[in-house]
Image (cartoon, rainbow, N blue to C red):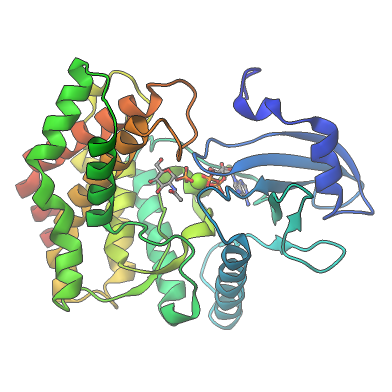
Length: 374
Ligand code: ADP
Ligand code: GN1
Ligand code: MG
């Protein structure tokens, strides 16, 4: 982790005091910023003298998740459901579910005096995450991980989960927000901004595809992860097999298509989301094939004909949606995603829009891959 990581601004003694609420009997030996998430503030805490040496400490982003208690309740419902299911029907390989540690008061979170919400999760030992996939074997594992997530939640009634982020992945709403932000402010023009304005202007119709299919009864609500991008999947450092899906804040009722699309848009972008040379970004169909080879054999049992028919659209809609979300956030002054510099969200949106173009240019190849694996 670099010296100028934004999380280094946190006061270490305060962090230790917060962490101590989850482990009052243990001595904390180290605490440092961890991972590269865009939403929460994540730390790895090291303890002395107990078997599990590390745990995750996270400040929940309450600017995004207005009801953190509901987030924790969902996480607990999910965790208990999946753990029960695994106990009854074990998988033939390692699969870990992050455990929630409670405070001495048996709460799933610690609330500070100034209203911050912190939680502590088990650290998935011997694992690592990647910001971009490196080979097709890993692509298959990413697909396996998403398939396993959907499989293990296929018998969890989505109505049991609260809506912790209203409007999340409802693409027409993001378009609406974008138009509102546009109408409000004066925009600093540049070649890149003009490109994005035109890009969105040309593709308004994309925003409605999945929601229209849902309204027409073609796609139904299930439990979705909501955010299964590549760095939310953990891999065993020794076997290189996927061992866990983390970042469970957005597990709620939704379309599995948002997950399939999100997993593919992040997994098939070798350059990752953070690259400034956005012109070179490409959707790699070889990785698309790998991810679907991992995913579809598991998902086959619950996917319908309509579900298959919307996989291609899901990929480009979610990619467009994320580009739109980044661009809107840039125009609104970077109020949602963590940024390292003012144009960060603008570059991120360019990456996603370029990816949409690459997906569209390869429509027939992608549809053929889906057909062949199906
Ligand atoms: P954000 O919502 O900000 O993306 P995440 O929950 O994804 O937050 O956590 C950020 C990063 O921290 C992850 O990408 C991963 O690298 C690491 N991480 C989070 N939880 C765990 C865990 N239980 N075990 C191991 N690593 C974790
Ligand atoms: C955020 O939290 P993180 O970094 O895993 C965002 C996702 C985006 C992603 C893009 C709750 O995910 O929707 O796809 O950034 N999560 C939320 O990197 O908005
Ligand atoms: Mg994350």
